[in-house]
Image (cartoon, rainbow, N blue to C red):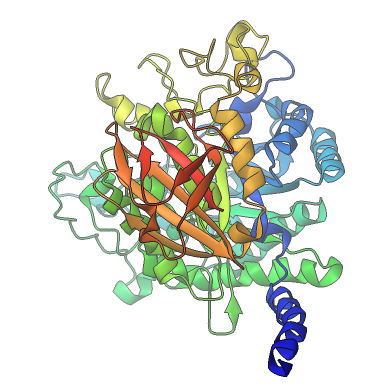
Length: 579
Ligand code: GLC
């Protein structure tokens, strides 16, 4: 009897201990980051191009979705050869997007709504119309050394050729000749994007000052563009000339294709990681001043081992979010449930134990979820992105299941599409389809713009696939998304553990649990129906309550099912809670 009384008395102490163990999470660890491609989000002045005021006016939409931070693709002054990733002035706003006052208003409104603004930092290159490059061409030595120059190769007939076989990510030689200086400059992306020389300390300082300028303006961090390309091999190790890259040997036999070569001298160089850690030091200077963590997201399509190095090394910290691109690079609509599980486990397996994972299913460089998987899989993918352990990232439009737009060869503007020189197959390389205007409503230009024309055509089907229609349709991708965004604030999703399984070729499921609260998320990637025994998962027994169901599901919230025999229909996705 005495023992029992003691146990009862101890219970609340155990409870308090369990709660106390709950680590307090910082803003970026629990939020959803929503990527806005400013050119396509909302045009406030009728010129057919999205702008800053369009974003400011619609921040409430993000708030209503349950979003706490947004990262914006570049808004800086640019001739737009790569739609803003070619920056002519890192300190100025592109005129068609607005003014610095508009930017300040955006920040003010975002602060009011408690939405963090994250900008795109593009350190690898400038625009060929930047003052730095123009000064370099004039022979100004300081700025000449900001870029990567190399002599051409002259053949026996006296013809000049590029220094070596390096190719641009967007096809063709990565070298461009400039008569003014009699040399070639390196551009790993378009001709209008000369690579910066990060072996020059002035460049390093210049870029840190740019970071400081925008942090002073109130931004909460940066997405770092094309980071894997930052350094090239030190040519002094190769007799003063950049060596040819070896052939990839992967069957790609077009020497103009990026995939033709193995990029051992232009990608993933060791020095890159040190630079990321240096930027983190700048971020932390700011945190030291006001306590707010500035977040860094790094964009690298690299191996998991290399991706993890962005987190930091030894006692040096790096990016909090090296982008986890598995849902983009490793799987698509043809993947089996086992392949999905394998891909999702990758980052979780490789990441350091004290770091968080992040989940990204779309961005402005890759086809949309509804097109890469299928429109039926939109809710299932959103369940994965929002309910897996870690940080969620959503590309604008994925919450309503936008599809890739059709953009004819004539209308194609993306350099990656144009550089194919192929009016038939250009669409396989073009990134215009995932950049078509955001679909707000069924009005002209999907409510994106009141202008006569938009910079890219609006995708077909916007009359029914848009925010307005989905807001008033009870079962819509948008309403499912909102419920998921709310659900992810539960302790089981914030702090809970994770286990997953492929029940068969088509059905993938995962369990999240914390302090006796257990959820199971089931996603059927194909059209066949199955009866699934969810009691495979430990402690998943008895009755399950439907918490959120995708639009393909006939199950209603609150309906209960026997854990050992749950009927899962084709393309159905459901979140259950163990009663
Ligand atoms: C990144 C951007 C892409 C851009 C490239 C060059 O991959 O996401 O849009 O074209 O870098 O800056």
